[in-house]
Image 1: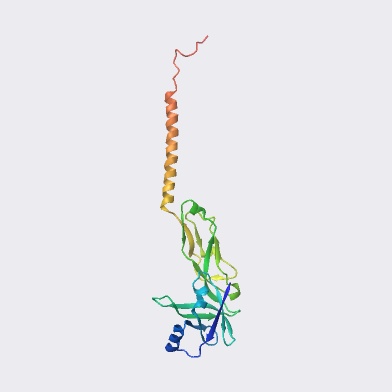
Image 2: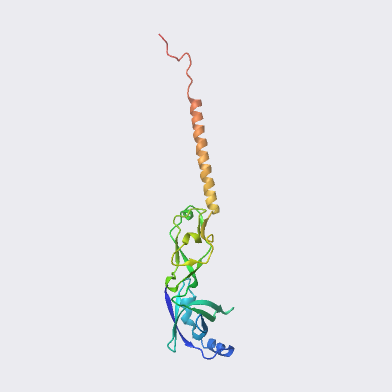
Length: 224
């Protein structure tokens, strides 16, 4: 999985006044959990743009001004209800020998046969939560939807992988091809056309039989 480096400064003073002063200075107060004790630090708001405003999942390298570095993942984020500015971020520290649970984006590839026939692609889950060691975290979960027909579904159970475990039930639907009204109408039109062709064929045959002249005794060849 791709990693983003966040350069921050460790916070010695915590509290509402100190937090407010940081925000006024364009800094975001953060806390790193998962280690021996929480680590309080801050970083410029712009430093989080590639981490927060993206559909992709990333791990984070937190590099503090005291020389310490930590591998982590984004755990929680708070936004201002009006301005949408970042108010606070919580991180969770990663360890090579300790499994981590993380939401991974689902990437669909290919052109579904069902969509080509008038169906509609529905994405039930754009992200799936997996549990694994940090080294095995995928950038995304790829699904080829090319063979899917109208009515077909992809379940979590179809995506089993040896490197990570899904934290969803096997019957959870990830995506599916739903029947669209246009597809129903197209099918009805095809049925009507087939019926009309069959009726036309029967009518043609009946007309041909009616139009065929009957053989009379007068026209019958004389017998010797």
